[in-house]
Image 1 (cartoon, rainbow, N blue to C red):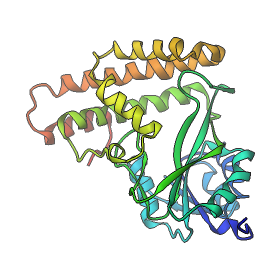
Image 2 (tube, rainbow, N blue to C red; image 1 turned 60 degrees about the vertical axis):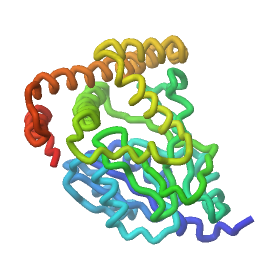
Image 3 (cartoon, one colour; image 1 turned 90 degrees about the vertical axis):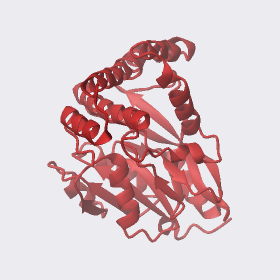
Length: 312
């Protein structure tokens, strides 16, 4: 078996932050046995996020926020990543012991034709692991060889895409997504997500920007690719406000979301029905505001006023 003496030299991790002082210590501590190369791209936090990151030896860069894809791609293009592999992590995530033990050996023993790894994610809500409703297992491409991947340029649902010259493998260990903020924060976050998802939907309809759907071109049939294909070819073609109800019923009854208990009902209802209804409402409002508008420049101006986002 390959020596693991220099295992920390093999992997760099990129984490985007803004006011993550309640999460970031947990995240970095879980990575310390695997890497010493942690890059934090902070959007000018006003709490102790930066101080905490620096106390763990992470390299911190500060940059104004536009969207996740823009911020993450900037990190890939500008951070001094000198390792063979790079990993994507969110500040409210951490890796479990099973993945901490598995990861160094998997990277060291990877064949030259392996360019990426999928990792299973556990999602916790109100302290409960949500196992049903098509939430678990979710395999996400989170590690790839440096120079072999980029992030899609989208406002929402952005994924890492590979250059297609190699193969991927799946790890058995887990990333845990367990946000410790309250539900007021959670609903506010999804309110902002709804604006971003509405922009992607209208972008695809009107060609407002250069719509990036690189995931569609990947040779592998990943979960993310299949989910997006179903969403774009079936879900988005259903009537507004009807499709969220159908989606919730599918998750809660057909995919057994009711087995997740009280926390599961709240999560599947709000994330599967309330949030998706909010997206439809944003689309409905925006379409009404843009009625009669014939050019994309004016549509973008209307959307900027409507959302408060700088779209160019």
